Each structure stands twice: as C-alpha cells, then as structure tokens.
Image 1: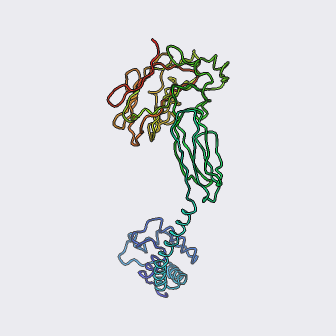
Image 2: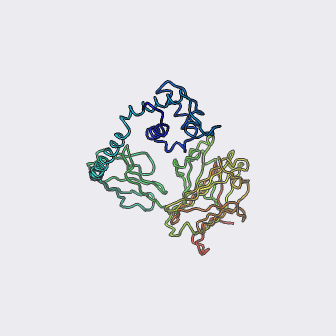
Image 3: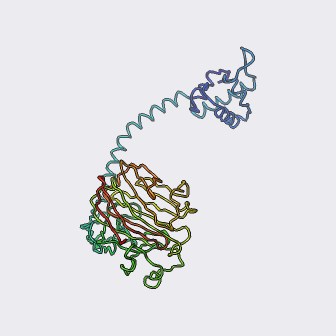
Length: 406
C-alpha cells in the first residue's frame, strides 16, 4: 500500500485484531492499537489522534484530514500487518481450509475418545458390597469385593480407624463396629473415590461417652455405662470421669449421650421435646455448649446452644444449610444454661423450627429431604444434664420417649 486509504486500513486492522467494527471500539482498543503501531513502526500516534482518524472523536471541520506523519505511520503499520499475515485473502482461504480439516477430524476424535473411555471403564470394573449394613452394635460387618481389574492400589475406610488396603487376590474383608453410630464407608485409590456407602450400627439403649474438644469423630463410650444414669437425669459427674474413665479434666472435653434405632419415622415431619442444663458449677467450662443432633438416613440436624457472651461458638446445620456463629448472628442460641431449658424442635413442610421455653427463636427452610430418623445425640461441653425426652410423629403422636423420675 503506497497511498493512504482509510477504509482499507480499517479493514486490515479489524481483520487482524478481531476486535469487531472500529466504530464500536472503546478506550482499551485504542490504547492497544497505539502500542501496536509504536512497536511495529517506531512511530508514536496518540490515542486522541487515532480516535479522530477512526471517527470516534468530533472534529472542528467537516473536511478533516490526518497529518502526513499520521497517514504515513498508518500506511507502514498496515503494510506490516499484510506481510505478517501473507495477504488477507490468502489468510481467509487458509481459515476455510482449517475449518474443513477440523470438521473432518472431529468425528474421528469423538470415536477415539469413546473407545478410550470404554476401555477405561472396562479396566476399572469392581464390586464392593456390605452383606449386613444395618445391625445391632457391637457387630462384624462383612464386605465382599472384587478389585482385581483395577490397576491402582485400592483402599477402604470404614468410618473410623484409618484406611485398609484391599488385596486384589482376596474378595472379603470384615470390620468390627464396636459402638453404635452412622458410619460413612469409602472405597478409593490414591487418585479418586470409587464408591461410598453407609453402615448403621444400632444401639439397644442410650450410650454415654466422651471426646476431646469438638472432635466427635474421636468419641469413646464410657467403660461404665451406669454411673451417669441418675434417677432424675443423665449426668456424667466429673469425679468418676477422672477416677473411673481417665478423662483429663484440665483439657476441654465433651460428654455425649447417643441412641441409634430404626424408628421408621420421617425426620422431615416430626417434633422433639427435652430438657437440658449445663451449669458451670457442676462440671462445665468457659463458653460451654449444649448441643443436639437428629440424624436421618440422608441428612442431619445439628445445633448447639452456648453461653450468653459466646455466640461466636454457636452453630446450626439443617440438611444442606449450615450457619456458623463466626459469620452469622446466632445470638438467639447464646443463653443462660445454669437452669433447666425446655428445648423443642418441629420439622414441617421442609422447615426446621426451634423453640426455647415455648418461644420460637429460630427457623430455617431447607430443600434436601432428611429421610427416616435413625439417631438422636445430645452433647455437652463438660458435663451437662439431660432430663425427659419425647419424640412425636407428623400427627403429633408420641412414638418414642425416655422419662426419668420426678
């Protein structure tokens, strides 16, 4: 190009930079164009000059013409672009040829992908089944498996006590569930999870135990399952906790009371009533808790009350919804627990309602169903007390209760 032809220059620049029509360009595009011209030609055209030439700025006269320096710089720049792309029409032709080649290759790539996927699936077939996933604890669960087609090493975690290597030369492994609970079983290699399932170990009665600070996965049942069963309530007195159970009272510890049973009632439509106390003078600690878990086959409700000035440590989970006192106002769960508290929960129409001393203090809608009720847990920071407990179905009919003396 020897003569200045603005329309042709615009076409060359638009096709090379792929920014769309120049009349739609923004400040960003003119900044980038200024840099490109200076790098290619060594000529410095200001952004304002380029905007006037390309019609993005109003000019004082109708017959505005760029200065000779600007014209020459744009001609040199357009020539550089043409040389780099080996002439625009040829580039278009190459682009069409490339598109045609891609259209021919795509089906072959798809077929290859499906073949590789099928071969991978074929080599990673496995079986992993628990013969007795629901029984009364303690009991031995039998898992039958076949991982001989998997090239990687395969491991299983049965809900606690670490991982177990599954030998491809064997097809059975037994795991002993010594205490009740809901346990998530996982089959995996070092690169991915292969399978997840659930084991439920039921209990014939309530079981008491303890665990270190908020680490409920380290729960240990008491050796003596009678010392906390007082006539009027459950209460793990700190003295036998130290002398009989070996709990270090100087560390922050939790006591918990758990009951797992096939209640055959929907957790999505029931209510629970109980009474709890957690008095610092009877074995509790700074920012003590009183917490509750209602465990369903496919979801959980978990919430805890805490001391009046400790709402930071309150929390509540309802199915897929979780709220923490760290970033949510949960002052309604920060209460004085030095005297007995009447706690009531009501689940109805996918909404969880929490009452304290007959006053509604919290409600939370949720979407994912919780399933049938299979577990009840009441836990305390330190040593709290729990009195009568009643559970009602969707017709407000009592179907489970644990009642103490007066």
